[in-house]
Image (cartoon, rainbow, N blue to C red; front, side, top):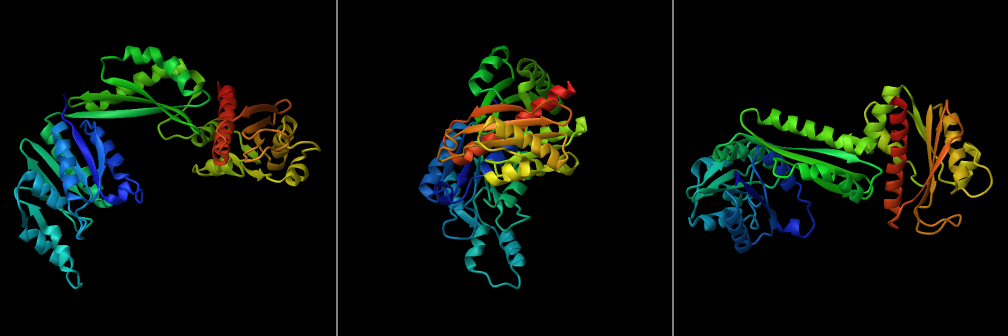
Length: 418
């Protein structure tokens, strides 16, 4: 089994939901980049007996444990005491650390408890703190090791990204990396994606590359490719394996793949608009500007996005976009909204969205009903797409409508460029 390391986040505020633990995910990503496997991550409150038990449990399973948090100067910062108990040694005041703290606090009145940060379990090695005041710790426990780093993200990253990962790589005795890539799939449910991709999952059995699926109800499915490579050229080998598997998956999924890694639909649509030399305009009703907000979050959007008419009221739909009498949640309304936006905004392509976000019916249509209009300057009459977005949650319906509308634009542009 490869050298592996667990992560233990310490702090009652994490268990109470008062602070979101982003540190553990960041540490996990750094471990993967360094080729250090991480099979477990845990959280524990500010209780010495439970911290000791959690660390010992981690050491039973792994070669190393990174403890994050509990190194400050207050009474609830008890990671040092817990690690001394795990090691079976007393705490000793480190004279050099204390002198460094006194120098940093020079000219300020600070409580004497601040110097608790200079206490080190006998036999442990401190990690110098450059950003904050709390030093980290490297604590040998037999043939294994426990690292303690501060919970403040900037201080944690400084230590984990440098001395901790460097020490772990040295202990592992292997040059390795674990890399992942996400293919973002829109317009296909997770179960169907898994069915289409099944031949590749089977083909990869027993290899260093795996496939997994991460569904998001408003943002489609992400297909994760993960691979592990070793040796001096581990990084290049891993990237080559990801490239090869991405090509295999794209051949199976075709046009349903819209982006890679963190590329949202807004990025993909913007890139396609720029390539085609076209500009997009919007007429938004139930989404209330959500699509426009996503598009304008992309740097340089002014080159391919003309703007939006947020036609939330019926009067604006009729007076500004030419929607005639009759229901505003309908195919005809969506068609006229798209045509009106095309003309009013001087765009080459226009997308309209009208529907029922809830919580009540509108125009006799159930919650989740959405009509999308898609008009082109050089095309025939605007086409209309209809969807019934389940879930019943008002915000979720709006988010899913924005995503589905952007995907319609993506598909149109992809066809034009093919």
